[in-house]
Length: 469
Ligand SMILES: NC(=O)C1=CN([C@@H]2O[C@H](COP(=O)(O)OP(=O)(O)OC[C@H]3O[C@@H](n4cnc5c(N)ncnc54)[C@H](OP(=O)(O)O)[C@@H]3O)[C@@H](O)[C@H]2O)[C@@H](O)CC1
Ligand SMILES: [K+]
Image 1: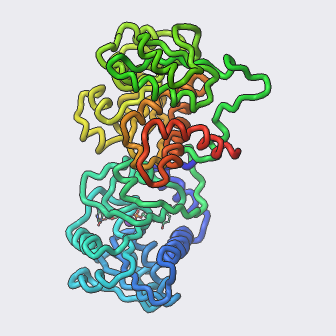
Image 2: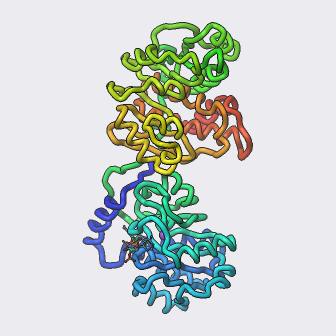
Image 3: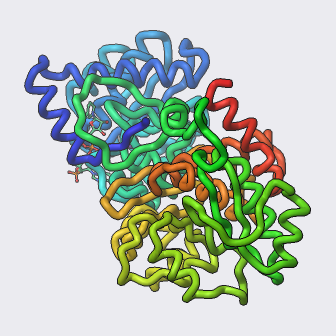
């Protein structure tokens, strides 16, 4: 599991550790890791032209000490001081190592000739946005295509929410310390981080606010059948998806379900659609019967039967509620067994806000909906946020942009239903489902276009690979 902690949690852990270590130890650990990461990014340090952007806090201190290390290994390091309160000992260390310290005027030529710009403007002490001098230099780097390595966080983003209401740095790499911060996981800020490299500095941290599953978690959580399993004990999923208007949704969601761990899938819907599903997947059983979970909603169109869906929501079996089915959600019931899988537009409707607001504040709105409707919310997107009503949040960050294709959501609904029917909680089913869905998409895509059906078809192989087979 990768963990993202809040600024407050990091500060407390830092204070704890600092009380036990000689002064400056943590910054030296951070700066050493940062210097190595910048060297690796550059490929070769000797003669490399490195420009440091230095703000008023310890984030700038990290950059200055790392710059001093790079200067000692032969890099030409120049620090642009954006504040007259720059970290003094760090500035002295850079000067002693042969680096230059300058003010932010007339730096166009310097930036144009740089191999890398290091963003030490602000870290976890920053507020969103960039001040005018910083913004001007960052814009120069963008104009000349000079890559930026961000220290801890890309300056200007909102560290605790992943929101980017103001101008900010777009990094080619972010080097962070101790633990991930929420902005590293949640879009739009996550995209501004680029790849994130974590340096261990020995912090002792409490449980995280936001988590992100890794391969080892998939191995731990995936309901692998054992010797005694039969098709019923592996779980039966009921699918109430697709319509005469959108029969494809039923076929695609069934493909997603069959690519998951479930032992059997029942399809409940119009005869003509059931025929189409059976033609594509002869293994499905049409008609009602006992199930361990439902996946409901994708492609129901005009055939949406809200009272019937509400009956399912009130019944004992857990439910994945997708697309049109989300219209049946009301905020009066106890729905802790429900996994709702909206995209930003659908979540906006549930919360009566506009879509752009949800996209800008993804974590906040996923949490809000989980709380208001008492459901686990899986908010789809480039970073998928899964928020449970008890406040736990997981994020999936490994999706390919090619996954933004028609029907991909139907595959996810079927797959999550399959995981729910096999006994996972809505939070686990949503987070494992999002991970496997993205992994299958990456496998099917290989950096090229994909269809929803090709994602579903890649699920067994992606799962086998992740489970170590
Ligand atoms: N915690 C840890 O475990 C470790 C932390 N370490 C490092 O310390 C960093 C945190 O350092 P920090 O606390 O000094 O805060 P930091 O982000 O450098 O600057 C805050 C100052 O900037 C200003 N400012 C605010 N907003 C601004 C803006 N938009 N644009 C421009 N300026 C802005 C504001 O001051 P003002 O100018 O308003 O007086 C504010 O006081 C952390 O990210 C990591 O890199 C590592 O060394 C080791 C382990
Ligand atoms: K920074």
